[in-house]
Length: 354
Image 1 (cartoon, rainbow, N blue to C red):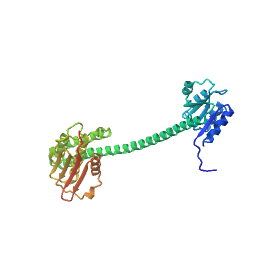
Image 2: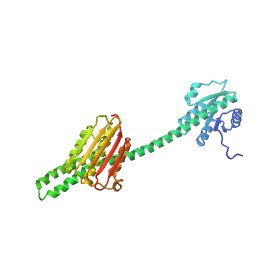
Image 3: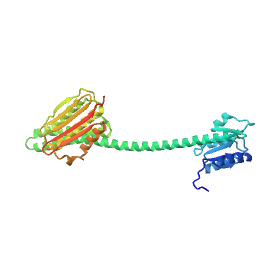
Image 4: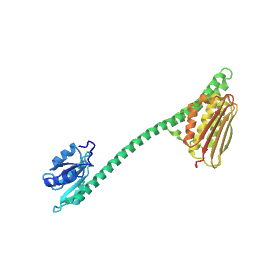
C-alpha cells in the first residue's frame, strides 16, 4: 500500500437502497474518492457530526427522515452548514427542485445514474468547496496581516504622538526653564524685572500644559491649527526672541503651494531646531531660509553658536524625529555641525500640491 496515497475527497452517500449504495460507492472509489455509506438520515447525521465529509450524496425519499429534513438540519448547524449536498432522485419520483435548493442543496443527480454525469457533478462541487476553503484561508491570512499592520500603525502612531509631545512640550519647557533661571538671577537685584520673567514663565507653563492635552487627545495632528506656515513660523521666532533675546533673521518665499504634510514637517523642524539652539548653541545670530520652486522646497536653519561634533548627538530623539518626519514625506535631511562652527540644518522636499 502506498503510504503517500491521498484520496481526492471524502464522500458520504445516504440512500436506503443498497443497490444504489453499492453502485455509487464502486463508481467513486474507482476514481480515487474515499466513500462512506449509510441507509438512513439519523445515522447520517450522527456520522457527519463525528467526522464531517467533504461532500454528501443524499437520497430524497427515505423512510423516517427524508432528504429535505436531513439537509435542513445540516444547514442549521454551524459545524456542518458548509458541507455541499447533492440530492439523489429517481426519474419517476416527484422531485421539487425549488424545495431542494431552498433546503440547502447545491445540485442533484437522477437515477438511473450516468457515470460521467455523477463524476462531473461531484468533482464540480468538490472543486468549488476547495476554492472556498482556499478563499477562507486567504481571508484569514489577510485578516491576520491587517491586524499586524494595524499593530505596527499603532506603534507608529504612538511614536508620532511621542515626537509631538517632545517637540511641543520640549520647546516650551526649555523656554520656561530659561525664564525661571533668569528670574532667579534677578530676584535680589531687580525684583521688577524678575517679576516680568516670572509672568512669561507662567505663560510658557500654561502653553506646555495645553500642548500636553492637545497631544494626548491627538489634536496635535495639525500643529499649525489652520495657520499659514509664515504666521506659524513668525510665532515661533517671537517666542524664541522672548526667551533668548535673539530675533531670527527670516527669508521666506512660499510662492508655490505646499501640502499640509510638508508644512507640518517644516514647522516641526524649525521648532525642534530653535529648541536645540536654546539648549546648546549659545548663539547670537540665527537664520531661517525657506524657498519654494516648481520642483520643491528648500529649508535652511543655521546659527553661529558653539556647535558640536555631530556624532555626539546623532541619536538624539529630536534629530531622529526630524529625520523620520522628513523621510515620511519623501524629503532629505542634512545636519552639519562642528565645535565652534554652529549648526546648519538643510531639508529638501519634493513639491506636493496642497
